[in-house]
Length: 354
Ligand code: NAD
Image 1 (cartoon, protein in one colour):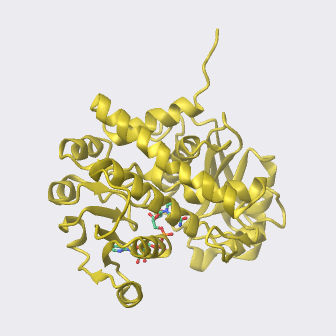
Image 2 (image 1 turned 180 degrees about the vertical axis):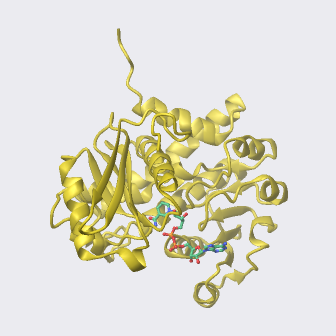
């Protein structure tokens, strides 16, 4: 399995392969760039079809973390780890403890947080053997509620702030009263985003593959339930993808009626060219890794001293970042995703002096 000629290899600094026969641990830790600080990113456990897919995920996701943290002005680099295996079948305490030992051996160049297939409790087990895990400290969340480290409330708040910035740019208004918003996925982030939007007076349309989630949004937030196939093409002001990646593709973009896309889902663009397609269709796209940075901001403060006020203030800078992206895009005709990439690179690339 080649790393240096892998299509997702992007000058990654370090890619580590770990194996432990006794516990069955097979893991990859990818450190993309550490110019701004230690590489922080989730530890994903997934039943990958093959090792190649696991490497692809580690390379791609670690790069994404570099861009997300740099754009959010955090002193963090980008990294990601993947454990190969079905979390429901292969996750044992011994395996997680061994993962902790592997992380410790990297001496803090990479710090793990929770991700798909791992929980705060799993990170705490790893933490028996390493100090290099984050997002596991109990604190008061930005919503004033006790938090076990789950970053979802912070991600939802940041997405709400970013959505408001996009609405201001597109419609020239500061309030959301009566504005219609379609939310795809009312899970941990999407439901909390819906709560913020409801409190701000928006009209909500929601879908989810879990009917109980939809029922909750309908009953408690007065949302209108929509069939999953209809949500992307609904005649609304704003579309907020909060479920899957790659939902902005040739078919969906042609059918989208919303003129603003502002949601928390990662990797919304099916490919880079869809960024330009949105621009050409006159749709204002809030780049996913800019608008959904609330969670990583929350985890960062877990390391340096958490206070709900500091975290909220930092999350609110997402509005300024998006505003800069939107203005640069207007001025140059370059699509928003590409502008966000360039801005992030300005933040993390060191100038090479000779
Ligand atoms: P979640 O699993 O709690 O919620 C996702 C919801 O989407 C679920 O309720 C699921 O049933 C629904 N869903 C899945 N497929 C769907 C489909 N085809 N149609 C409609 N609904 C569907 O996850 P989450 O933590 O809320 O994260 C949501 C998105 O935001 C993900 O893309 C995630 O990567 C991204 N994100 C989350 C965080 C965070 O702090 N949790 C941070 C950054 C980015």
